[in-house]
Length: 387
Ligand code: PMP
Image 1 (cartoon, rainbow, N blue to C red):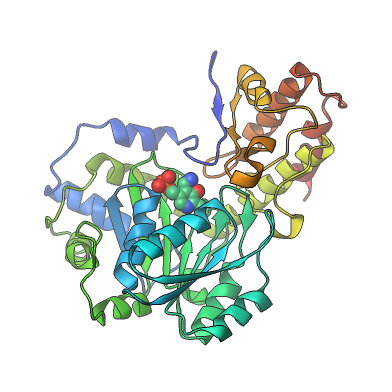
Image 2 (cartoon, rainbow, N blue to C red):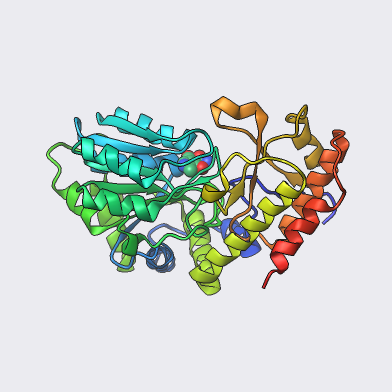
């Protein structure tokens, strides 16, 4: 399409045409039988996509931050100790939310671009009686992928609940919520789940629901209280209408369509596709001689965070935009002006990635960076063509 630009930021992303069509349909009543069917099916599909057959899904109008707020508001009581496995900006946000609800927060940190090791997380858990551990599956500020499986296992061993922020990961990076013992896995609609911004999504496992039921103090957030939403989710799943606050009808319809696509592709195939495209992007960026924020051993597959070349800054992104791809600037405060971010998740194809790397090459040439033309595209293509 002439004049079309590819939206390759780490969310929102490019959406499937029929997902967008669902957004554009005439809005139906939130208590209509056909909406009960759509919402009920979307909730069932959430369990499948999160690989958590025994979990309770919540779909609420809001953004990813609301999903984080909802997890913390319902699970934390004033004075509880919480451990934040910190891999960047969004891990800090978890700490801010935890503190707002009266938790005593400790962090295990790593240098920017790294992730704390399991031994460090365990050492921290040994030192305190933690009620909750938070982990950011992919921290969108750094492109660091955390070992959610290992951290969830440690949290379980030390009697703490594990809440994982999958906003830049869910339905892209491998997560087996039930098998791994992740008590709450949460995300937002606009990332790998593939729906325009506006839905906070989370699945709570049985231990999380038990902990919420056993609270001594009331949930200090009216809108986010599970008590308000649980009966609504149960009703819609039973194909009955029920009202607490008006659901985002068109977004829920779009969610149902997108979850259908995800399940039709199959989660294993989807995890593989994200790995392949992520590896190809990293190979392409490396072949252009650019460094990357995340260390290779902990690099995400849903996004890539390259450093600008020496002497180049955000003007590169303008030049890349001129060549047809929208990329994002830096976010992690210590290095904010020194790097940029590429999202490659959801409906992204190999062709989208090659076009993006082509646009990056055009942008690099426009800002006077010297490199072998085609080197990034070729390296990515080699990776994509691997059997
Ligand atoms: N966590 C992560 C990892 C994110 O990437 C984001 C958004 N970029 C959020 C939380 C917050 O989500 P939202 O902007 O939808 O509130």
